[in-house]
Image (cartoon, rainbow, N blue to C red):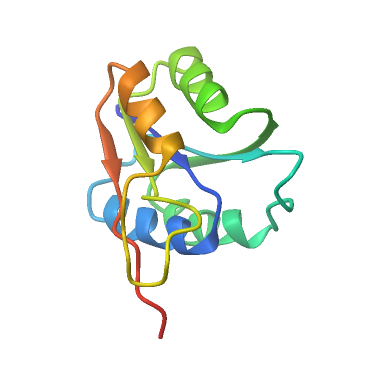
Length: 126
């Protein structure tokens, strides 16, 4: 059994995480989809969760969680709490379209966890 954490702030990150996870999942795996709400950022909509529920629940156990706070702190605490085996994140929330770089949240998580962190590619706009 492998436990995955998808830390997402957008439907695009969730889609990319599903693309990455779908061929890897086994029936005993667990996937947590976590969105962290920040006071100055608009709340996530259900679309951040819907795709993971639709695509991954046929293969593995999927749970969606919404928490409030500083994203890096919440993600690290959640990963430790659930003894996550791998974290999947997006590159940077507000990067220019088609431009991928590691944002401050991803960088902070990378520096604070022992689990592998996979950064999904940013999909260019269509």
